[in-house]
Length: 378
Image 1 (cartoon, rainbow, N blue to C red):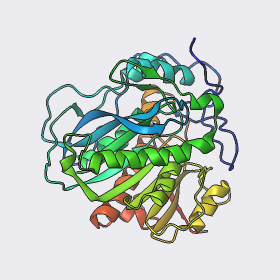
Image 2 (cartoon, rainbow, N blue to C red; image 1 turned 30 degrees about the vertical axis):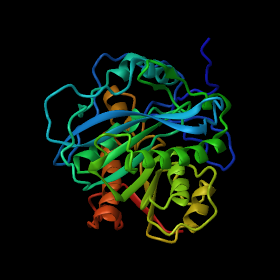
Image 3 (tube, rainbow, N blue to C red; image 1 turned 120 degrees about the horizontal axis):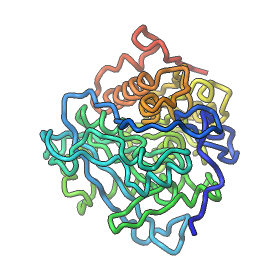
Image 4 (cartoon, helix red, strand yellow; image 1 turned 90 degrees about the vertical axis):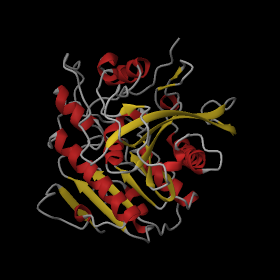
């Protein structure tokens, strides 16, 4: 019998924001209501990326031999990773957003049809040949929110790839529905016990392991030669952002990092002298609203930004912004397509600034092009 998570992902309620609190709920772009979601038959689509390059994607199945999984200790930790990258190929089948099984499991939590989620259209050619082969692509490693399939950061990954980055989007097993090449689909076992303090340390290990597998002598990806191992950003949504902060403390190979509206569970108390960006929803991201943010901010000794985005809720910076707008489910004050535009601009600007040395006006303080952004320096 399928084990059911104790929580339901409904409404615009954020991940619990007090340190040590139980995860009460995770928001989507849905209205804050217990009414059934409206029926919709129109196909949903991840907005096309805006960079100069076409994008390709492929899937990696990785096993960290000898490291027991926190949620199922009798097995080694295994992950699915979606790679995204620039390509010259524009013809061919585009990648599925998520598998039907992933769609069914995640859709049940959202009270949305699984087939609707599985049928979302993407923009990247499946198993396309990377454009570069000389180790020149900076790498961005992404971690999704708690219980969120890695697919929910597809738009961000495609945007970065279109701007000339390699992207590794990590699926953390037993923390969201994940389908493996042998046909298994694992459920979110972590959602049942909600021991969130276990999530961050394990994810930090996951992120370093993925980096090992992409940049080591015996790389798991046959095209890993495109990656520049000296230029790497790590970041994510919600607990994925908190895990990225922890990973930076434990692995100096990560040059910079960002957190999109995630409480800093299992916060490392030491100083961090590399660039870090905190981007919060309108309510959660204000100084004083989540004490872990205030604590993390004081421990950042390098380049840093604390930005909130007016009119947004917890998952506005994910694909739920634009997809919710298309489905008629967005109840944020800010249009979901604008949330998507802002998220992509902030993350690509951050990567450009710290991996390429480019100017990023979106990060330099209030300006008329981005009136929704509020900069804090408590």
